[in-house]
Length: 396
View 1 (tube, rainbow, N blue to C red):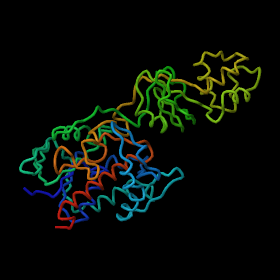
View 2: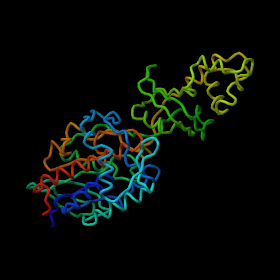
View 3: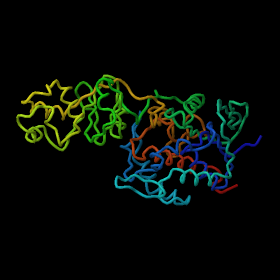
View 4: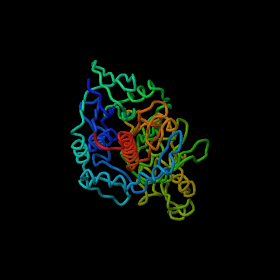
């Protein structure tokens, strides 16, 4: 049995980046992927355009049981990630909101380059790792079909439980636990927030810009601004996705449908003597305005509702009943605590020569390229540490 320098479990963004760095340095690499091909989830990111990173990345853009230190993103800046991709042959572009994409605006371009730079790795797809054991300082990986692989060093880059149809599901968490790590409770993040269908069904298909506040016991605990999308059972859109990390049943989403105006300014804009159903004609989507008014108990035929109508569109509320499924979430909240990882190398503090990268960790970012940035950064960090420990990074 050949013993590789490094085995990587997970052929997603983080695993592929780590493999590319190690292969380019001439190291022997084993890449195990449970799906029938590598990079399936990567192809779905950024609506198929692959939002690689964001120009404004910092520690405050990430959530988890513990805050990432600022120095980590001072080392792994957006410019650093861009430079790494340029070294692979990828040209990137930034949009007006700072999101960084491949110049081709095609996720396939990114995947093709990563695959080209991992050609010297032994890549085994449709191979589910079910157990990892360590004997005599060597990791042995047992697969579901009975095969056994071995390596001096091991990277768990298995991804999270979100979008399990495109990833390894919970495999990485069970492997991490078997090697002595804790896993904090898992939940979907960057997903739609479910509300009573009867309250939102009439709005299905409508999009609007709003300030969205997440309220708990009437206290605002977080807010986002942007486009809200209504479905037959939920509120969606990037601003809602970013709030989903904190959302729990019985909390409230409050939409300010006219955030640029105060209630008094809105009241002054509204025509006098008109039936309430006509007050926002030419201002808001008719169905949106009607539902906001009805929710606040305003009679649509009332002709003296200007004050109450103004307050209604400033505080259009929906009680949260739950979150969309893990299957539909973009990322997983929860995972291996970063206190169990040496962030200067991504090496486990529990098991020597074990490294953990990407979504398996209890860190998740907001929408806009932040989660891929974290995947690339942790992969680079682990690969650099491994190369540094193998004869100073000089190819064997």
